[in-house]
Amino acid sequence: MAASTQSKKRRRGASTRRTDRKVDFVRHHPELSDSDTVAAAAKRGLRISRSQVERVRAESPEQTRRHTAARGRRQRGAPKNGRQERPPLSKSEFIRTRPPGMTAKQVVAAARALGMSMSEHFVYNIRSTAKKRAAGSAARLSGSASRATAGQIASREAEFRRLTLALGLDRAKELLAEVEAKLTNLISGR
Image 1: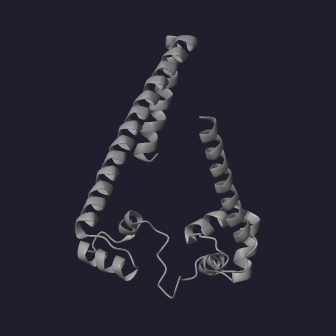
Image 2: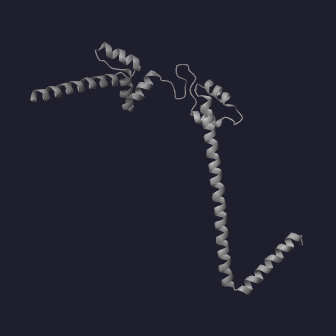
Image 3: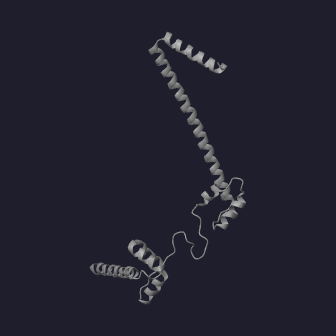
């Protein structure tokens, strides 16, 4: 049993050393592109994939900066391999930004011109969801506005009652008569 455990440890150690050699190789060649790094590693007897190279460079920010500067990598937003770049909008946002009078077929054609793929059915689904959300939020807003108004009226009425009790009923009636006379004059234009 002890011999088996020792051989496993040795194998694990050898695997770790190989991985370390691959990582070191990638980090020591920041000037090479990912595919050139894979080819150069193969010449040295190291089997490494392009995704492993990308992963190592992503883990080490300093190495990545040197790697991208050395390769003169494209700037952010520049088209990749001469292809037209995808817009920063998601498909749903793209659909919602189109005018409502635009047919689903026209939306799909416009999306295809920008490199997006979608179906007319998808356009219909997004538009119907947007309409439902708009109707729901409008109902919530109107409901909360009427509740707030009713609440304000109730609190003002309570305040009027409190003031009436504080001023006395006769003085409150006098003040109401003055307000009524002023409103009548204002309405009649005097």
